[in-house]
Image 1 (tube, helix red, strand yellow):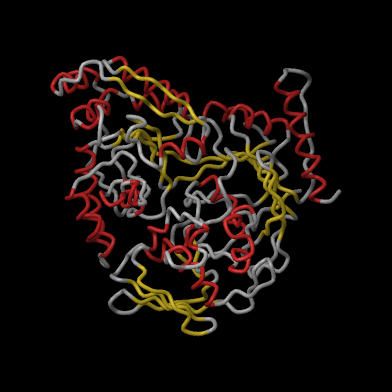
Image 2 (cartoon, one colour; image 1 turned 30 degrees about the vertical axis):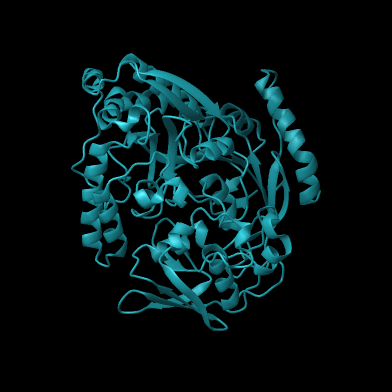
Length: 525
């Protein structure tokens, strides 16, 4: 059976087998073909254009279809060569010159070269570029320090920064730095996100909405052909259904296993994989208007929520209580002196009284599931109960993941008082710069959806991203964490240890601290 005929008919058969298992009949099993890996994703991708998306759910597909100039070395967040074989940095830290890899072609047969790299970055950064309207490009912030990018040879490209920018190489390794085919963008325009073309280990074959994204192995891949013939990414939003699919054999890999389901996968038929990484789960609080415009009310929310109970009872011990905005996985920049807000409902009531906030009404956005969102409905329900126990009047509104992002990312003004959120990041700069800085309010293109503003935090972040000495950067980030924890623009809830489960037909699978799903070396029997 061909790969595409499997994907057209096999997904229905696999789903039927799972329905039987869910119905409590005799155990139902399905058989996925050899060399075809079926991955249970947590949601439908938003798009397959790496410059236009922000969710790890999408990144798990994109990192297999595209390459960047650099990538993270396996098992680390350290940068190594990819489409660039080497690079040099000027003494003042403002000029990066990359030597590009010869002989690489995009999946459409067009050549990878310096002009292609220039096209990619000018498309994101230059509003006058003829294909800038194929955006928006929400993480172009990552390259806001780029003053210019130039092809200084057929296989050499030079970036000139307007000031030193410490996270530059790390950001190039992130999906926003992946290189797309200029020809494909010119051909498909705004529909490129449904017709992706890169240079990666797998090439796009088909996307059937709400059923599957299929990619096939690239036999000509510059880093060696992958073992897998194809990968099928299936969006299965409901965690219980995803678990049943895994047990029934309808998928070979399940990402973001619900903590309550981990016990289902004991024994020789499955392998549970875990990997720590920089993750933080939090509540965005609307600091612009409504009850949370008062810092005392924001602090009250932090005291009111029993985060230990959420971590231990809802998440089954698969996370740790968060102390602030920076994940402890960034050990060099993490402020170990910070202690999480303790569970203290009496203190929460005192702060509400001091603020004159009697039974404040709260609209709370919750998602059914999404990248790094853990068990969001159960967590949201527990949070609602804790807040109501100290006097908040909380109304939950629940949305599908992409709909949820469409409501939260544009900002909570006039919409809600609080919203769940999770970030998996690549550098201590990323999350605070994009989500806590005044200049990152949604109307300025950032993700500060709660409109937090503190000029001292802004100054610390601006200095930290331009400091070339890592010890100085670390000190600035530690100072920032203290101020942000006190200001409480978020409720700091949990830092997760990511997980996945594979069946016994899958070999050489590993999770990465980047939270990407890299399948080049995976074998499926």
